[in-house]
Image (tube, rainbow, N blue to C red):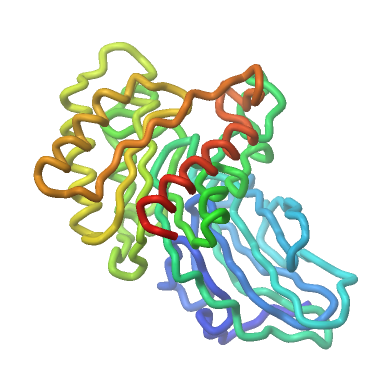
Length: 336
């Protein structure tokens, strides 16, 4: 397999997520759930990838060929990876999905490479429905494939494809972006630091690059789902008034960029101590005349019936239940 050069990237694939196209060699990305969809002919396909930082070598991807079951691939070096072989000699579709979170690093996509005799075809169109999910490790899918809480964090057990946001988007036939980073909070992070919180990171195209800012006009969602606050409440001493005011400022910032979006502010599924504060935020927005901001109470995870993921995070079964609930909430409000 040989690398493809001189590619018109937007004609080659559909990019769903925040991608930086400033380097002509190929788009760079890092947020969880960023994925690339393409169509090709031939019996196999590979991908050429480059690590932006050689220490960021635990990025796992899901590969979906046509309607087949996802399988995971570790991208831990620069080079070409064979993703599929022995396919029927015809047309196929591939989805290449970043399972792991922002902390695992940023990568550069240098092109899909069809097998000998194959070729790339016009990419599939994006969905007309768009959702943005904003959150922390829960939204990432942290530890959702672990068998118990004591397993802690292992990168290969973090599967954003099965996180609640991805589940909800598939239920609704929508494309979605996840802006999420484990341990981050609305006002303060899990370690009680009030810098580099999720609202500060939210403006970035690439999670680790503060100088590359996202163009909010380039991808306008119909719905925004915010699930933040679990890390803020993780330790005693939280200034709840500061939390409320920071949350309110963030929702107003979201509204300033997405004037018509429906905004869903969630409590749960790991901690409901956020509830009263979020209700205040939603109430203030509604009282100011913004009736497209809603509170959603997600029932707490139930380890006895659903199991528990790594470090007491939601399991795949909990994510499935939450994703279906949110799909219902969004469908009811947007008429999808």
